[in-house]
Image 1 (tube, rainbow, N blue to C red):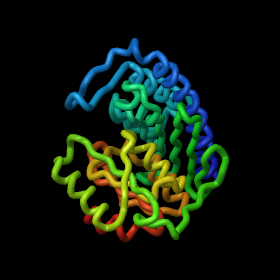
Image 2 (tube, rainbow, N blue to C red):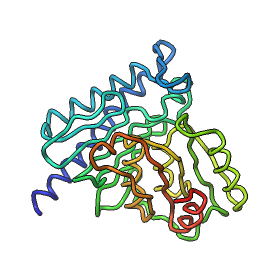
Image 3 (cartoon, rainbow, N blue to C red):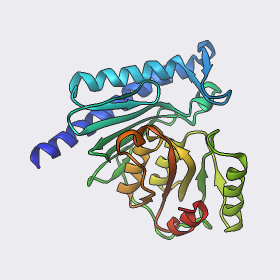
Length: 265
């Protein structure tokens, strides 16, 4: 048990350090984004730049230097299996579209799984200088302040985040919006699912729903929400399912029932 705790604590400290370092590099690219060469992936809305790749390479190198036995899954370069039971799950820049268009709604997202469970979640928003951090059993913090969700906040007196991408039909997205509004709620979408999950943990949003996300987009946020006292719909992490998309729903205690009904989960 002692070695497991020290292993978790060591990785938690490293994740926070790396997130700040990676965020500084990403912010440098953001401030000179007019020089970036932007490429598309699945369609014209799914973009990537050299910044994404350089930041992921930095994080991979820092982890490998200290925990070479750990697994690593990054959005840009895929999965490397490990032997330690720990796997790092990283989105170097979540919200690349806002990033390349000059909007501050992007972040560095780092999760660590232990035997498939998200036990560390660190999300750094460089433009706002906000570091969200959580580890299993240690609570969630924002710039050192402990986060605790208010059960009196519901979809009717607070705001829900929603996400959409080209894995989901426009009709399905429209139905989500319609159902939320009919239930008396309201919504925002800022272009970064990871950052909106951090906002759920911070109580800025009462919940977040996206019909299809990947592990690198959501698992850091899942750890944050759990440690702040919220609930998340289980995300599959076993075997090949870790690299595939799945529905993501996170909610504060006062919104769980309503949002689960709206999402059909």
